[in-house]
Each structure stands twice: as C-alpha cells, then as structure tokens.
Image (cartoon, rainbow, N blue to C red; front, side):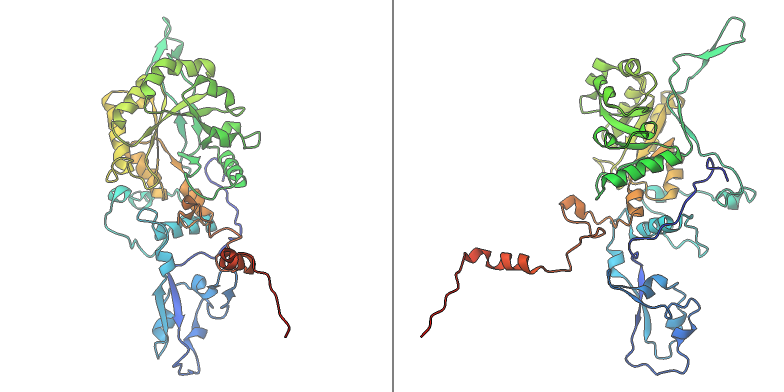
Length: 433
C-alpha cells in the first residue's frame, strides 16, 4: 500500500522486558509429583522456556504467560496462582494509567492496532474523553474496512487560513481568493512535539525529527533545540519563537511554520508588532499562536484570529486538564473555543490544534469530534521508548530505564569516604615492647 495511506513500520528488539499486570506464583512445597504435571500441558510452552533475566531480575514466565489460567485451574493441590504485580500498578498516575502505558508499549513493540477480541473490560463512562461514546465504523457500516488496509481513508488536514469567499472578474471567468495566505497539507492530523520532561538526548530528538520527515508531518520544538538538528530537516520542524520579528532570522532553512509563545501582555505585543509584520518578514511561513487552557481562553483565541493569526494551538497540561482548573478537561476547552469561533462566524477560516494528555488513539478522533483540526503528540513517543512516567527526571534523579543505574550496587571507595571522612586523617602507628 502507498505510504500516503499507511505507516510502514519495522520491528526492533526491545531494550527491557516490559512490566506485566500479573505474575505466576508456583509453590514447589506440597507438590504431589503427578505423573503428568499441568506445567507440561501448557499449550504455549511457557514453562518449557522458563528463564531468568539476570540484568533486570525478571523471570521470563511472566511475560510469556497468556493468562489462559489452565495451569491454575488444573493443579490438583492448587499450588499455582496468578497475582497482581504491584510494580505494574505503581506506574504512571491517574491519567497515564498502567493500562495505557502497557498499551503504548505493545503498540510500539508490534506496530499494530491494539484490538482485542475479548471485549471491552473498562468502565461504562469516565472523566475527560472517556465521557464520549463513538460508533465503530466497521460495525455500523460493514462495508467500511479501513483499519485492515482494504479501504483508503484520507486523514490529511490543511494548516492555515482558508478564504471565506472568492472574487470573480467582470466576465465571471477568473476567480481568486482575497487575502490569500499559504496553506500546509500534512497527511495525518498529528504533529509531534517534545515532551515537557523526560531523559531525552540529542540523538532521540534527531530521531523524532527523522520520524516527522518520514511521516510528512511536523515536529514542534524550541528554537534552541532546532539549531541542534542536522541540516535538511527544516521543512518538517515547527520551532517556537518569541513575538519578535527578528526571531524569524533564527529559523531553520526551509521552515514552513512557526509558533508564537505569547506572554501576559500579548495583546500589546500583537498591537505593536502585528501579524502583518511577520507576514512581511517571511510571507511563506505560517504563524501559529499558543493559547493556554486557562482563564478567558475563548476571548484570547478570538482576538488572535481577528488579529490575523491563522492557526490557534490550545494547550492543556500533560494530564489533559486546564492549568487553572483541574476539573476542566481538554475536550471541554476544545468545545468552548470551537463554539466561540463558530458563534463569531470565523471557524472555517482558522485551524484549531490541541495538545495535552493525548494518550490513546481514540483521543485523536474524539478531539476532532469536539472541534479540533489536529492534535500534538508528545508523551506517547517517550513511553514508546519504555518510559514508565515515574517523573524521577523532574527531581534530578537518574532514569531507571537507562544504563548506568547503580542503585543495586555499592562501591567501596564511596562507602569508605561517606563513613570515615568526618573522622579526619588517622596515621597508623605501632609500639614494640
């Protein structure tokens, strides 16, 4: 299938064994020594290939088990049990739940859609995007078969300001758009973005830029970080700049879109500079303005659009909630800004992007249902690299997923210094009688 309609993936070996939700506890004490042990009847051969990963201290049986419970039910003395893994349940937080992290790991490991035939075991409803119910197209319309690749479904979106009407010549033969601005087409409604925290190296950032190039989308990052990206990636970078025309001189070569980081006095800045200043300085570059999900965000977005900004980026926190109201979810912010622009009669003339807490594939579709044209994806890329969302990096602690983790080791020189350094220098002497 052409790359326009599908993302071609390649499998690579994982660095670590993933944490699993449950593990097998097999007691050997009290074994009846049955002639045919239930362990030998495992249809998946889990016990035949049982081993220990000495580097991680993880037993292979837990990751290989398919949870059929045949051995648990078949042991006559009930010596085999399944138990919830407390380390798995401790991952993430109330938004980035252990099940979401495990699902992202599985998608990154297999490159496939996380579809299960065992039904949906989740809650009937929940907060945020979980309060939106949708119909699966394959059930409602069986002729539509998009997820298996037998039908082409366009996911492309246009970034920029679309003209509201056309102007014709007196003869009515030629038409053109008034106040035409450039448009940027990307093949999917997802823009990559660097997470706000995480143990991220320059090679990782360059890899994400390469991913954006192959996907044909954009990669949002700061101007300082964009300067570290090798040449040739400018058209796929989305640098964040200050509301200063001179900042356009620092853009990567070939850059097609930038994002303004506006401060509290953004209104005076826009009056002083104006969108026309940016358009005159670099007419081929699209301008996006970031609006935090707090306060009068609807009025701010409306004023920016009326000032000529063609793209609005509504940003929530990394849990998908408002910065000033944790009870307000990203879906609510998208709806309120979208309806405000609809009420003003200018929704079709502007692109609305959203970010913050996009953790599942369904969140992309639900954000579009709420009124967004596209979304930013950040932390799923970090979790795909086996991050556990422990947030130790925010506290200046080492990442347990990286090499060089010395938490399980003790060094004599370090212990000797910490124990005896406060005693001062002691010279050894001996006396002979």
